[in-house]
Image (cartoon, rainbow, N blue to C red):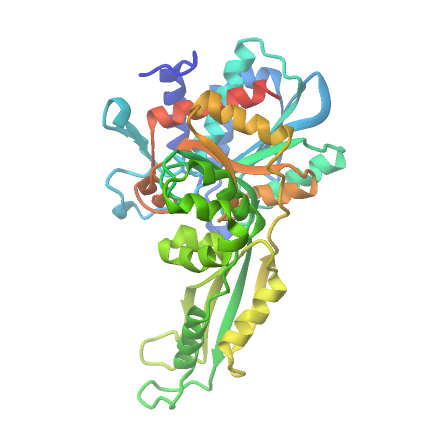
Length: 450
């Protein structure tokens, strides 16, 4: 196996595979969660990383979340590295290899580990621990305090990370830099850009769920009314779909294009460099370039869960749809609710915000914390990689840390293909071995710089 930056790659890889085999699966209904694998995972960390556990303080928070503390020369402006140990459920029949076998497929640079959690998010969690274990073994003494925050239910409630934040807040901890999962090193995401880009989230979109509900008296399906509840609900969903949120270039996206302009070929170089003039055109065109580009320039809404009658020959007395909305920086839960109500335009449809949080504050993409991230990208992942700000498209546990720090960033230090990114929360999740090993070097260099 390839060696990366003096790290014992074979040992690291086997520890990673062992932890991937533990099915720490989250479910929205906690009654469905098997907590035994979570207990097994926590115990395995102590056994697999003895030097880390000999030097760092360790607390179990909210049942299964973990908070580690590595004392440095000063407690001011500490570094917080985040990850989560839970994974989303699997449909084993959809996988070409068992989702918790952590098999290595291929050889050389093509070797990859296939397992649920390989990227999201045990890839980062284990890479962080490998970096710490290596640095402790080498005698490294951090200049600042270092905290490791590992939530146990990021994929569902996120209250493990919330409790960690409350603990740190009660102790007066004010991090100088927080780094959680987020954007990766990618190729070809932005049209015209030919260099690899490290997409570091300086903000993340808000998230909310709206229920659309249609009601009727019910009865036998053999004698339906002219406009049954299911039809009215379908019409409401269609209206939301046909009236998307307006497009615009939010400040972090503007910074993304400005950063990449010097690395863009053809006419787009001028377009990206003159967003004051071209911004409205870009905002209108980008939704046609795929779902990722669409999500960068507008709040998105999509129907997910649907429910209706309890039997095929019964009229639904209540038909309901969940609309998942991701709020672009500048929009709010209140403004999105108004948009949905205007789009539905039907007083017989109940519009109910079940839960929601506004977009996170925007962290600066200049200054010393940002430079530390960019420097670690260049030293560990490649000097040809351009580090750029962007808006994190999904939600993460990092949003809870914005109450503690103005420097909260979201970046997963792996060079991922589009197919690898598409496998997140889907079948055949995987990561190339060499890519994962380089990620360890990123965390090592970031801790050294802190």
